[in-house]
Length: 299
Image (cartoon, rainbow, N blue to C red; front, side, top):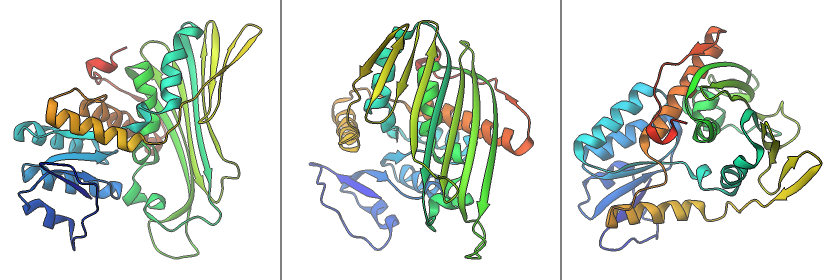
């Protein structure tokens, strides 16, 4: 948890025994929550209840109902609730947005993020309750797709976990592999693959979009635009400094009222879609969605 105080933002860390001690300080106007996903909702609620602004890493909460309640609380208190989605500021996403018109009408996308870990760490990102369902804890995968393609009509998903039996503590796993399919109203079908741990053997981070006139194949440091016999390199901007840029935007919003690059309603919609993926994986059947996205996403 980080705190920002007026009149000037001081990036020097402040050591406190417990994050709740920050809530009573009159010299603190905004608090940033950068903790375990399962703690985000409790901490955000407490901060808003003390009439302070909140900047929180995604996900805002592990379920849609709690996320909606937090946004309603922020509105009732007239406080800023900013859910960070720096993936929308990064070079890979900006390159996708900039070059998407070059491939004509898109009809298929595939986004794969695989991260091997040998041995698997024993930490919150490998814990069912603390990280949540993979596409909720790793909400940026869903957020990126719906920012590009808009309203989702139907989803399906499957997930496999490898329990951490050797260390004998419930809730931990050593690897997971999760696949989700998003069917968008505009006609795009998107495959999402997310995997990590000791049953994953090669790092992969690739976004591919197929269109009627070409394709985009993008990775964190390189990308290509493919059309007919043409294969042209697409420059990918750096991810360096994105958190600092996000915080600068928040400060500008609080001081000058400048609109932010993302609204909490967009993150709430992403949570609703990710939770539908969870339900599909649990039930083994596709899930239809009848949820209107925020206007900014209504492609």
